Amino acid sequence: MAVVVVFHGLIYQVSLAPDGSVEAAMWAPPTWVWGLSWLLMSMPAFFACGGFANALIVDKMRARGTGFPHYLANRGRRLTGGLTLFVTFFAVIASLAAAVGYGEMAAELSRNLMFLLWFISVYLVIVAFAPLMVRLHDRFGFAVVAVLLAAIALIDRQYLGAGRHDLAQINMFLVWPVAHQMGIGYQRGWFRAGPRWRAWAALIGAAGGIGALIAWFGYPASAVGFADASRANHLPPTLAMALLGVAQVAAMGLVERSGAFRTLTPRVEERLGRLSALMMTVYLWHVPAMLIGGAGLLLLARTLPGGAPVLLSQGAVLLVGVVLIATVVPLIGIVEYRLIPPLGDTQDRDLALLSFGLMITGAMLVWHHGTVVGWGHPLSSLGVAAIWAGALTMVRASRPAGVERGADTLKPVPLRRSRSD
Image (cartoon, rainbow, N blue to C red; front, side, top):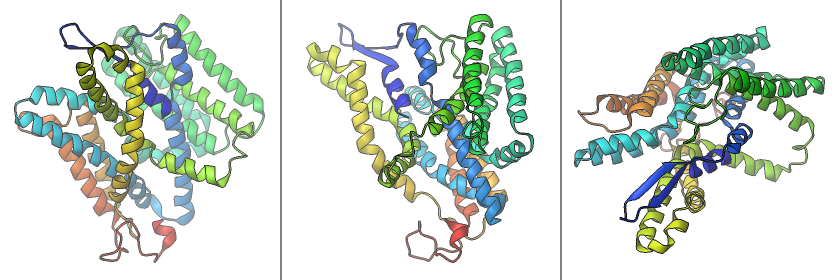
């Protein structure tokens, strides 16, 4: 997450022109940064960790006999609150701006702010299918990953070879599931047990595969896009990004087997757990924090023109943004926590599936069209409405049947603690 925050703090360079106008340009780093991007790209690890967590949750679901409805409601309710708060906050601002005559600007700015929802859109789909993917892994093992890799290669041939950018978007739902599937395998013991050479072979083989794809098969050299690297392997993701997921999971196994985490004290583990609980909040809100911090520095630079090069430098924007993130995110996290609907003793599978469908549709619409609500912006309005409807449906699907009236809505009555924790 730290890598993501730093990257987005550096990606744009802002300056003041002699006439006082603002100039912003995408960062064009030295080409050696392209190679470094492969070492720092963290998105496959996000999905791999999700696969690890989902495998644990599915195992608990099986052991407790709670079933698929409980799984959907329990996973969905933890995701919908934060997403709804984020979208609603910017929907109010964008809609008010559009109402006073700044519709196009509000649509464009809100669309840029919603860009990171591509991750939420894909992850919601993966969460919904996670029990099936765990079952497939337990039956077929690495064959599932092999089939996905073959499908990705076919899509890449159409994308990179024939220029079919429309087909490339399919890889969003193939590449990231590979990383998720590797996380399931890791939870089941891949690279954590057995001969160490397997982990080293997977790491070296995947890294060598990335190099071969770049050198001989026309794949972009950078993991992410820059001003001087408009084609990259991130969005849409490619086979090279899928191989990076394999390499990262193998590296996780080697790090774990080194004993690096065996000396963590319970206090450190508790603090790491608290930080982990805020990571999705950081992900959603760090770009707005960077923009607000940058806007403040811009106002200061206008009053102190001589200090503009320092005040508007990438380092200054990043530093102010990080301070804002550290200040505001914990407060937002408290609000998000209170928006998690309580989980009752029974759940409604059909309503939970409907909620997932609404949330996925809404996230994809606002990702592409922004958050302006109004007659002139039907798709963004539909997206915001779908997210609101999905959140309300998830509340109903969670069936808070065991919550005392007037009590803290986050604390279910412990009638069946194992069913509602």
